[in-house]
Image 1 (cartoon, rainbow, N blue to C red):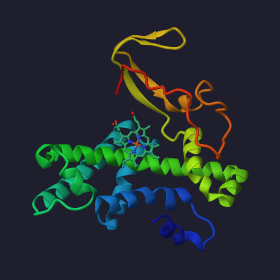
Image 2 (cartoon, rainbow, N blue to C red; image 1 turned 180 degrees about the horizontal axis):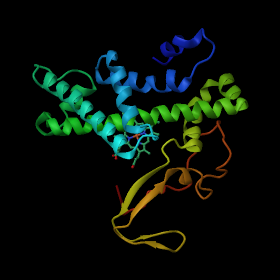
Image 3 (spheres, protein in one colour; image 1 turned 120 degrees about the vertical axis):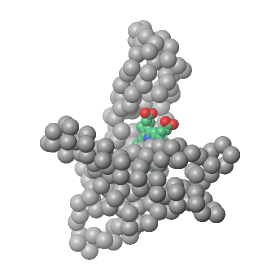
Length: 234
Ligand code: HEM
């Protein structure tokens, strides 16, 4: 799929890689593993745009209205699939079929199905687009690393890990302290505190990585400690 998409602009010699490769590729893969028709790609793009990349120049209530309308359309889309699949003899031999069959008694509820599909769409499309964009942008700005990968493609697995660390396409997430959390600094985060946790800061932490501001494509970076402290709930 990645190669097929490259072929669409290969002869032109240049492309807007975000629009022409990084955006369509994850959605096309998603549709393929879900067993959904590739013709539905524009609908998926419209959803991702409205939900995650709204036009910030619009008034806030208009943005919220568009996000909500996009979510309603997506729920309606997957609701139709739920009804189609569950009315047939077999749930299907693709990821949607497996998800439908994954609940208690071999079936999940309609509501669970819709929420799982919404979560996967939110989690699995724009993250990959952003990661591809960050990595390609890094390689465009750092020709010596690009050359290193072209000369030795066996470096790719380590390079993906290292560039995901260095670029951190998802910057932060929310957490709530379930219990009092003592920090290495000696301070304590009291139980029930809502926090923003910065993945990007963790990925550049000199206590975890020997040389955090250096990009090294030849070895998989392994933090010297794991930061997941007991007592941190989602
Ligand atoms: C390179 C691409 C990706 C990045 C950078 C990424 C990043 C993340 C991060 C940072 C979280 C943790 C969020 C939190 O704890 O608050 C997360 C969770 C999650 N991601 Fe991804 N993700 C990627 C691809 C995907 C894909 C392709 C899927 C599925 C199609 C996916 C499904 C999920 C799900 C379901 C969760 C929630 C897990 C849980 O809470 O138990 N992600 N992702």
